[in-house]
Length: 233
View 1 (spheres, helix red, strand yellow):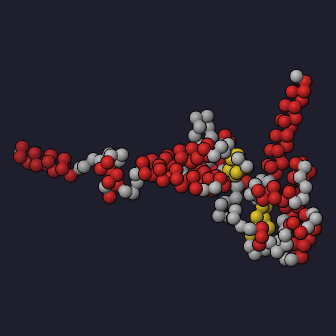
View 2 (spheres, helix red, strand yellow; view 1 turned 60 degrees about the horizontal axis):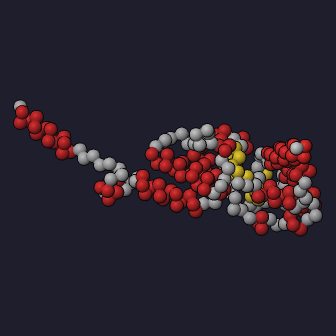
């Protein structure tokens, strides 16, 4: 009986080989090449440094809708936050008191200059529906060739383009509330990813553009209050 117990014990001990994932053996073993925390962290850091600010926000949006968790995701999210901070991008709207990200569809965001602005599901355009790299150069009627958005709209419609009423309203409000002039109002929307040209013949305006007016109006009001207080002092 003792002989059989010894044989069973030897079999069990010999069949299980524990390898720490950070050990030299793990790094050199082909069995552990699928995921290595050390190399994965370095590769993730290098990858994030190569993308644009816009793409960085899209990476966060993908994570905001993901509910899985694991070692690889923890490393990825940590490096994502580090890259935002390295670039000096304000992520206060999507982080909590401990500095970690807030997730969920209510935290879907867009990039506004050097600030990540939370817009939620209702105002977010899926990255696959928005082609950030599309070119205004493909427009058959250039906005620069017109003295006003009204003239541009008429010429676009004559050329068979679908022109959204929201674009006229958006440019008019930006010009009124932010003191912009035509053509700056159009390119202000374009700069903040709120307008695109979908080939072959459709101009589109993403919902939520009114936030640009609200945010800038609040900022100007706050600046005015500070000026008033400083003058009284």
